[in-house]
Length: 180
Image (cartoon, rainbow, N blue to C red; front, side):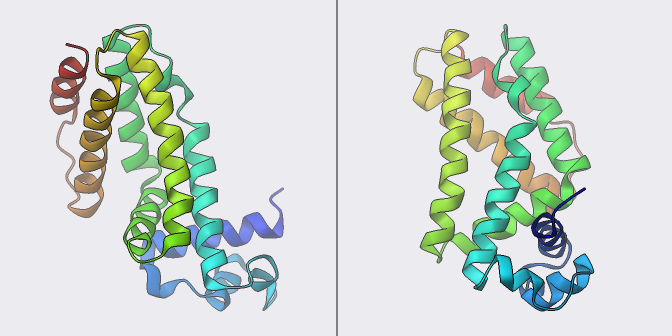
């Protein structure tokens, strides 16, 4: 059973991912989670604390599902893992991903949130860089940046534009180039 804090975070993610940043208030989170009034503010005293809590919760959920993507034994396995990851991120976890994208925009002028989101990016970059190194990439920093930029762009287009086109050819091009 989820704790009340987890219920509040679930509701906050749902609000961000379906209604945007303006919908995220302590009161609305309490209502969405069916919690007593004031419950969310007991866990997250300020709006910034709530935003950082949501960012951390999203990161924790996304990281837990990404282990296979960063332990490939071949370029084809990496490609398959990335396609699967992006499909899951933009289909099954669309609301979560949309909430993360909302937070990215807010982070452009919120240093504390930017720092929270930066921790997640650092963890993902390190994992991908290690996988690319194991697969023989010569410039793992540039290769990691290229693959991540491509994946982030594809995620943005899928979510914001409801673009359901085949991502495999684009990812394959970038993965092959990263390992060339």
